[in-house]
Image 1: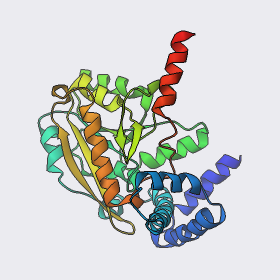
Image 2 (image 1 turned 180 degrees about the vertical axis):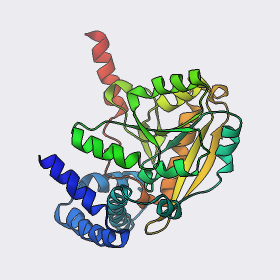
Image 3 (image 1 turned 45 degrees about the horizontal axis):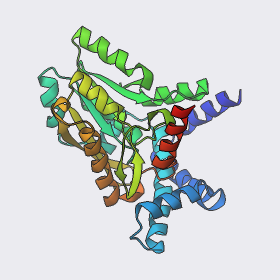
Image 4 (image 1 turned 45 degrees about the vertical axis):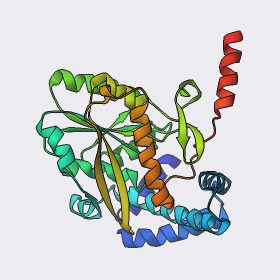
Length: 301
């Protein structure tokens, strides 16, 4: 019952224009940062380890800007539930569309890899910029609460994208290939692997970091072109997205190179505008030494 009441409240709030929702975002910022102190220790630790060269004053400035941006993402995401196609196209502009159109004109499918940077939820509006007849899949992890899961599905599919549980994406790709139907699949590349998938490590933001390599494996398996999306915040409520080619044929790359490419590219974006990344995520909770010791213990048992 409580879940449905919250569902209805969010539905009503999402009817409000962004101007009013940004006022709510400002209030939420004060509550989240100063009152609740939501994950402030995690954020501060992440920033200090990622930017050891920055002064405490610079770290604090980035930290506060991040929390303001996080609150804006929150209201922008829910506003998308009732936002018109005209408004979202005005507020989230995709540049260099010819990069993708070239592949679609050739009848190819494409994988895009991005991070929790900018307003990644608004990336789902790219379906409004795509040619007709192309399926757009966005990977997601279903929520445990079925009411909230339904809400997020509705928001993320608002403009024609199809959210696909991450465990179902291979089946979707095979179905499309058998039907001869092109698709565009969006993968998040900066999530923390679980303990069973700590198989690939590299330096990311000044730290030894486990990186998911599943995107590379799928791209190589089907030899799909891979692109990167970089979102810039032009001003509050307005974004531009650059479309950049990473590789036409991942099979020609050495193992791990594609993963290094998109991870390094994301790091470059973060260093340019650090407040736009999701610093509240516990990205470095795993250590390579601990994983190696656990592996040895497992082999000996």
